[in-house]
Image 1 (cartoon, one colour):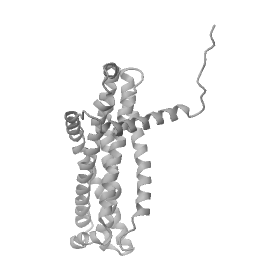
Image 2 (cartoon, one colour; image 1 turned 90 degrees about the vertical axis):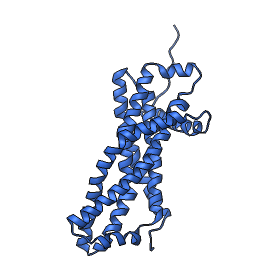
Image 3 (cartoon, helix red, strand yellow; image 1 turned 180 degrees about the vertical axis):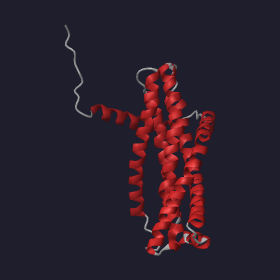
Image 4 (tube, helix red, strand yellow; image 1 turned 60 degrees about the vertical axis):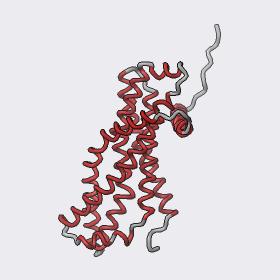
Length: 264
């Protein structure tokens, strides 16, 4: 009787293998993005789908985010006697931090979950295996357009959240806290600078890429049939949230070290 051989394992080996496969999928997406034929029609369809399920929730969430930030900063600046900088501080907080985070959470929660469910259903119906048998790359045909669509929608939604959040902050600061409209607007140039907008868009682009890759990876690897698809959707959202907060910390730290504050 032949002796069965088992692969040596250690605590955390499974997590490392999953992480390596996730990074491998991300590398394949970047590599196959520039390979022809490019799936332009699939990209447009996915862009429209992700935007349609994300625009309204993102707009509704951005209003209370901007209001909370404006109210807290307005209260703090009133206590320390710096009411003239309320507008600049609110805009910096919304554009640099709140806007990319809100955009990424909605992309992952609305668009990413739908993306994962679609790919998971294709996987359990063995459509992915059939494509591989026919010599068609599932990554190039299905995943690359979805990831690029998530990145594009994230950039546009980030701009929308920034505008809606700033307008909401202006309304609540001027109306609720009786701030001065002129001082709120004039303080923009005191602390804000153009790189603040660039780092916001870069964050949104990276967050969209991460959300798309994680959702696609979990959709390609469901376990246990239809129930496994639902579990994969939940896992993709949770994993994306954790990665986004870690990436936001890293990007913010690097940005603050490389770009000096205005006036320093």
